[in-house]
Length: 218
Image (cartoon, one colour):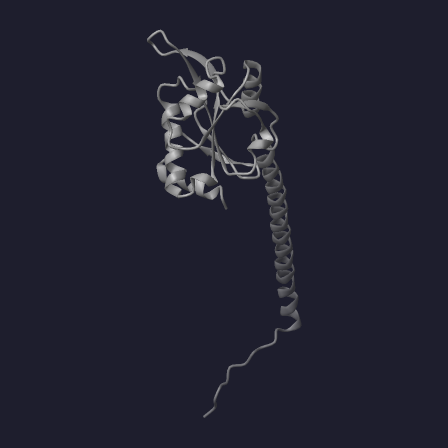
């Protein structure tokens, strides 16, 4: 009885001629695919480079803005004096009926909840310098259970700072004949080196806002 063993057949030269073009095509397609992938990587690296530059220069930093204001104790404060601690910067005013005291109270609760209130710097920079004198700020900030720094200045000084930070401000009527001010209500967050991290929006869930403050110390 004959036993037939499997045999690896070597293609004839004629068959090799038929197979060779297929190998060439595969090699060609492989090279094209490799070039395409490399192109994508280059584009990605370039995009990331410009994106990183924009994230560093597209937002106002405490290290890049320039101003001198007056704190709630009547002392001059430069932007560079604010560098050194993780910072939550809020633009508001003492006659604000709701969002300002609510936001400052939230920030005070957050740093207390984190367990390191002394590690953070909370700042109220007024958008109403005419009424928010250092004495007014001092009395107002004493109502909060936190060490909050108040900043004010002349109208021209405040206007310049608001412009540098891109803060919206417009006089408004509260409907009762009283003058109020519409303004940007987000909290600006900064690392200890003065670089901007991001913001806390008015509608931010508590746990998200807390995590953002925790991340400032990393």
